Length: 251
Image (cartoon, rainbow, N blue to C red):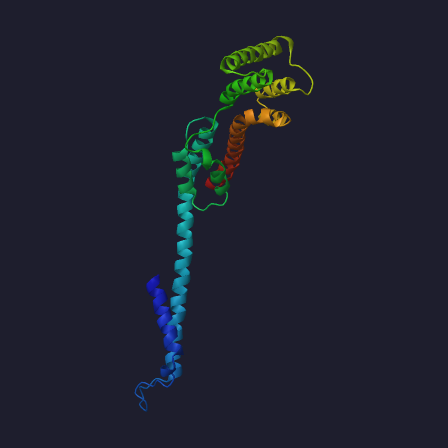
């Protein structure tokens, strides 16, 4: 391709450079060629080269399309592997990198990759793990709410022990008698816990957002982890659509 382009450039220069204007081969003889004839012959060669370049461009486009079509089954398999990995909690960096490599500059794949690459090395906690993790969050918030003011190391230890027992007792009572009502911290945590157990994580986050700042801060780490899971679930839906759209091209 580069050689053909160089040839075209050379011919164009020959046509335009002033020294060729008066060319006459064997001037005055029967075999002489005028400048117009030289230009006409060169124009014919240029047109032929242009046609060759156009034909090669068409063939290259067809080849690129064939390559993309051949890659589609592999892309579909890796996309499904990535979707499955996002449903678990194991790292998925290898699968994501393979998906990135196969899809190249596909604009539909780029948002998928960007959304989940931050957690690729560590994975995303499952719903069950997040539900289990909220136990500690709820206990910590209630314990902080129940802890009396105390000074001295021994008093602080006793205070923590009593607060922990009170928090545990309170949550046990919820399970036996139902969650409390109202706008207080215990009632808010109880509603958030119920949402977590139902798998309504966004509802739980919204519920926790009304807590006083110092109590809400105790749940911040858990909230951020939940948001990572929600993002992963959204990407799994995007991958479903991606797989369907690409599978249609194979058929």
